[in-house]
Image (cartoon, helix red, strand yellow):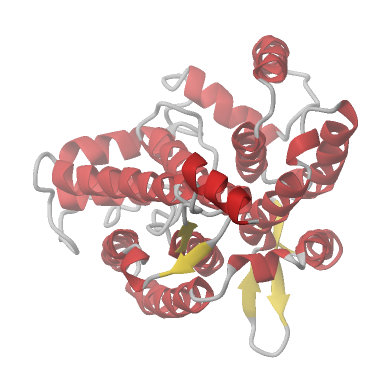
Length: 386
């Protein structure tokens, strides 16, 4: 399938949505901790530069090195296992020597997983439903998932599984297989939830169990593990329509009263709700939906399956991860410790997401070009001339 590059195909709408969402996040982060605002601005500038640079390269060039990407992913995650720095009962960070910057490979792992399987699925698309191909893909995904789970980082593990399933679905996995897997996994998930709530369970970490128990019975854990979630819900409601304003001086504010620890990360949506109100929350949700929608739109028009998978993978990453974060802040889901894309503080997450969007824009620039069809009359004339 031929493709051509035209600058009019550059998705300015997507870029504007990304920057707008990022700017909202910068204002919210600055309200929580002004010292972090400058760092986040620097991350945005670096991220935009990488995104624009990557977008003008053909994504197919990078996919030629898909196995390098795969082993780079494994290598970084394995390095965390052996040399990673611990914080808050988790070992997820690598310290870059010389400059003292912490780097979280699990955030980059999402993007690298998308790139690798975009190439792998495109190469094996005609055999995707054969058992040995499915087994190989599961075997290739397993090390990434297991290494992230061991950190422990259950929320990112879930996101990796969701992205992997979306790639299989868009790649053309048989519906019979999908429904068969759902028929097994849904009851298994219910049984899993029941088992992890037992007092003597050894399946998940104790702090993860407490988060689930606090979500199921928030009143019982109102002063402990449900404290942040309840305060988050209260903060969002207190913002009403227009919010209390950025950097307000109200003692009852979740920021000023320190009712939520590290509000710049997992519960940044509570800060947006309290200080920017319903309008701010609606803007964040609308921008997330528009970004995911633009990714899917560009994916449909991409020149090949690999481009489609990259776009749908990134759209799923932004959409589902955004839903998870907001669901936690509003009490719909137990606390997962997952950042809000382009809003939460975190340079690795921010720059990694911009990197992924660079590949989306690259796929959007290289769209399908219909091939010329020879009419039956033309074919007859050609045969007569021969």
